[in-house]
Image (cartoon, rainbow, N blue to C red; front, top):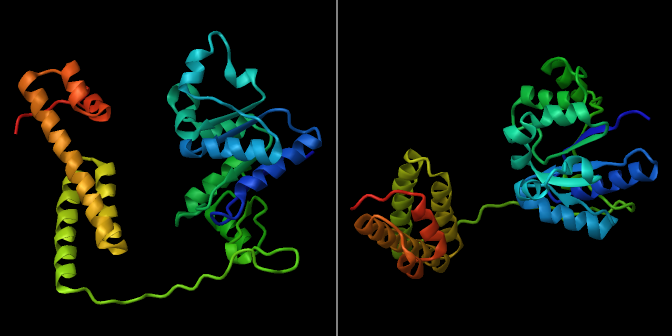
Length: 283
């Protein structure tokens, strides 16, 4: 009847979701678990719902802002035995501000899943394990020594190269990495240089204005060019079209000072919605 608390840090694609489902079923078969909460990044909620339902026959209820607003005088956290929510939603101040600490104190069994447990910060890794079992590793030195001896009982990491069938056959084929060199034609070099200058200038501009999503999209352009000239051209064409729409919408708002039904007919809803909450200056 010991508390089962563990950090599973297998490689991406090594089956952490399946391991979590197997653990949940085993604990339920033994009569040790009646309620379960899954907290994952928002974009993985549908995947977890599908995996739990199709592979293990377990149905979970999603808890988000809309669900809470629609539950009049009902505490969803207590009304349903199996819930799933996103990390970003759960760690809000009016939900569960100190998410890790709250779950550590209120949960009997706790399973952390991550493919990047350490990230080069030993103290942060120690604090993560501290949530699982407070006081187990008081200092980084104690944790490092336990890990060196293979005595870290809270942590397991397996690489894809380590995973094999019961017959000893590797589950994943070996990966062979090599660098392939090739020469650019004069026109290709000219294009690559122009795109690099564009990315460098616009990337710095986006960072100075704290537009992180724009900066990320600009970096993708170089990767697209490495794929093919056509791929880079399509990306640039889409970006040019979007910027032209934004410029036209900005001039519309600057001249009229408002958005009306006519504007909504001319511009895509995503742009019109942005303009309704933003200010444009004539240029």
